[in-house]
Image (cartoon, rainbow, N blue to C red; front, side, top):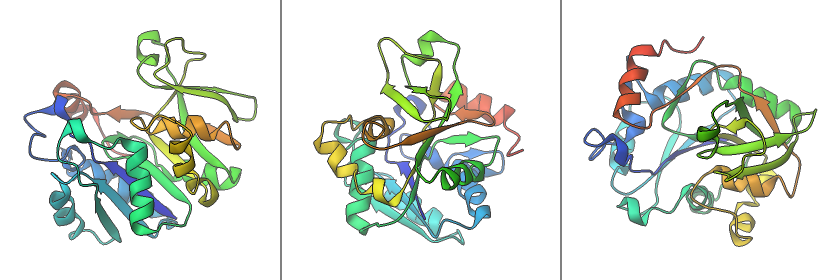
Length: 244
């Protein structure tokens, strides 16, 4: 299994901290955001390579960080240098698949969130379902639902409908940026793009994929800390206590 880490954004809302430094390498406690994620995932022993998808501006920061890690980490530079020219998450995923000729099951995660639960639970869930999978959590705020992926599911967790940033949300199930693709479904990313799925938000591919094949949604067993701006970063540094 490969783990693709989406880290090609420019985090403009965290300036000046991220003006010349990538958000995923900011410290939360005694570890970087990426260290929290990778060190946890690695405990399951299912991932044999981590692929960090970076923009050109920050690629060397990730290369230097990767040299200090014991896991096999490959940094892919998508060639963009500004927020205005970014490829978007789905095109970045396809870029990594094509560049490295990836042909495996994939865990695809945002590199700028920390969790208080182990992602190994999500991997185990996906392996048991034997389908592509996402996570979901209940979001009471209608306002927040307009800004994220919203999913409808049946009694067996199968996705009935998913939409990114819906004008009229069909449920209160919100989807964090953590995804599992089966090997077969990873091969369909290019087709999804060709078929017109959105490419900026990573969940747009899953929204399209769920219309083609079964995709399941696991209820998130803990809390996600989204680091979106300076205020939230300061709050996370004070509140986060690691993985339970």
